[in-house]
Image (cartoon, rainbow, N blue to C red; front, side, top):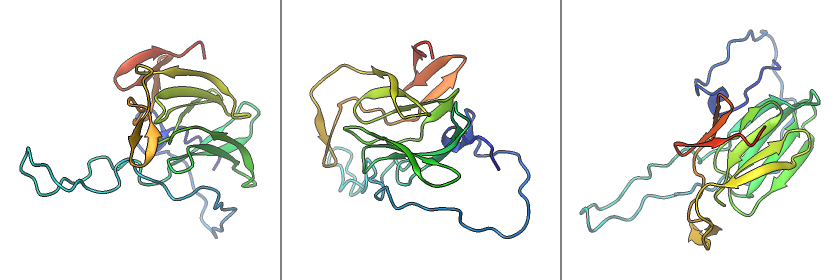
Length: 190
């Protein structure tokens, strides 16, 4: 109850574990939402094959974006938020954890494939547009964004226009630095 789950799998170590007591008793749904469409994976089906490697089919290796992954964190104003990135709706939605009302929505031009990392009231995440962003939890405003690769014309990726250098990994904050794709970038003073 009221514990941060502020990144993918809960923490920077990705343990998917948070020690806390859960009171026994009756559980009931507080709220739900049908705002987001079903996720669209980057690579939804196995490839038909590979002539060069003499393979009849190639199984999909990237399966981390086949479901919506919520992150729960407290904003600077003290309000608990549930953040969900969207691969089909190209953006992120924040719900008030108590009421289920939409606190803010951030629309982008490309899918967001992985849950954000939240630290000190800011959500950090990358998208298929090739940008990593820092977004304020209070209102969803973009504090800063940085392009990881070169700014090249966009290409088609499974029916959507994307950067030829999409961010298809979660980001990680460590010692005030933002780590993405084994690269190390300053946290832009945040």
